[in-house]
Image 1 (cartoon, protein in one colour):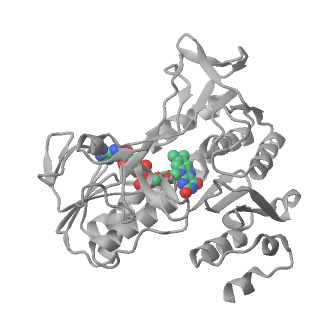
Image 2: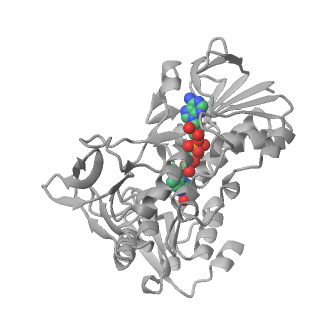
Image 3: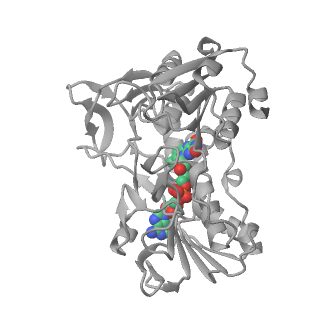
Length: 408
Ligand SMILES: Cc1cc2nc3c(=O)[nH]c(=O)nc-3n(C[C@H](O)[C@H](O)[C@H](O)COP(=O)(O)OP(=O)(O)OC[C@H]3O[C@@H](n4cnc5c(N)ncnc54)[C@H](O)[C@@H]3O)c2cc1C
């Protein structure tokens, strides 16, 4: 068993790895190096309850400070892994300090994709990924009147829901024809855009932002490629993320759209693992190399790596992916990967605000998207985890008993 495990990145995946190592009885040294300040925190509330002011800072911490002390996890905040030397098995920090490892876990996440447009550096152009960014944004949101959100992905829409509920004028620009187009079925996109529109949010689809227009250094409008100008004293950029692969690449590890790992989450160096947002792994569910940005993925991959290091299990990583997004009173929960689906079955009544869309590809259930239907979601997690896949006919029959199906 490795004697010193160094974890680069103190986010969801890093903290889970450290916790699982100790849970599995690992008695060696654990050093966790994170470049953000303070205790490691939960990211999802940054665009939800924390942004709304409904969640105090103390409840954002992933674990209390005592957890790290009690479990002998040497947390190094505001420290950056600047380089890895796989041959010497050590990392160099930004300060020049070197740390030796027996096993290194890269849990370095992803960073905001920056707006590549004129005016992107104007005051009022903001992002939501870190606690520091959300803390900077919150008081400005209170002052803002006209907001343009660039990108109709989960985070942009969650932000739009919060801002519209505060009475702000919100316009969302989206390059594609529908919201969350990368991850949900067209029917689910339709449900969510209608819901946002009812709350006052305006959408411009197939719209490309071309520039942010400023006056005296402050953003005042966003100009689209077709020449329209939309007033904006706040511009939220939510156009996706870029995985942090640079230190891995410089160390000669295989990289692509992430740090490439095998089914055991090992990089091309057998003493280095990569997990979470930064890792590109062979998925048994998506049936291809993929990178997932979700708490489930970061946590489950952290657990899998800890299991392997401690000899508990070396099973290939096969956890069923799941995700959630809270937009106002609409709780979207997704299990599986809908990508490549060709048929959908709606279970429940979309107009009632509580329903699920079952997505099939070649007759096989690929994903279940649920809105305010936690029972369907939990059913999906269990049934897909056990490989018991509901047929389209069964899903479409409102009288079909899901509980009995699981027992059977
Ligand atoms: C606003 C927001 C809302 C979200 N909502 C949801 C949601 O509702 N549901 C869901 O499932 N997921 C959600 N996500 C995604 C989820 O938070 C991420 O998938 C998850 O945080 C990934 O965990 P991670 O450990 O891989 O990366 P992170 O949690 O990002 O942690 C990586 C850490 O490593 C640090 N780091 C980077 N490079 C270095 C280095 N060289 N040295 C040291 N430290 C380094 C980073 O600064 C960061 O602190 C949301 C994300 C955001 C930003």
